[in-house]
Length: 126
Image (tube, rainbow, N blue to C red; front, side):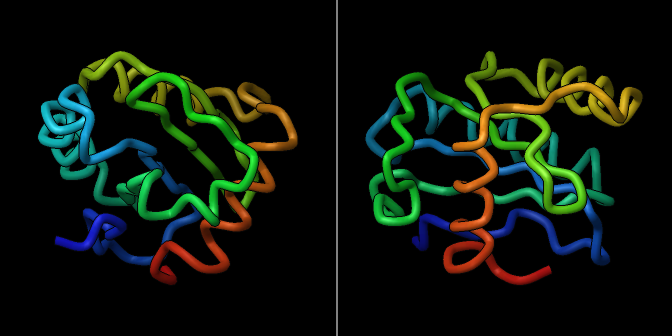
């Protein structure tokens, strides 16, 4: 199975939800179904699963310490980068709050650089 893949193929969107996990992680394996549920609930967003072990070069110096970790972007700008509870409801609340408040969620520059690296060579084009 390819570790990095788009989970939904909706029309082009300016929202991306990228899950950074690892196949060896039991929490990640259990969480994947909930992540796919969240993707199905939001067909207007692009969801992708990235295995940090397989894509270590793209991660660069970013150290993912807690799983699952999400990177959420809008229009090419990182809006959220950090660990989340492995719950579809938690992700839904996060995404709803980011969509409701355009000024919220401006993570550190390393998140923006990571987003660029993932879009340049790891994630399929929209």
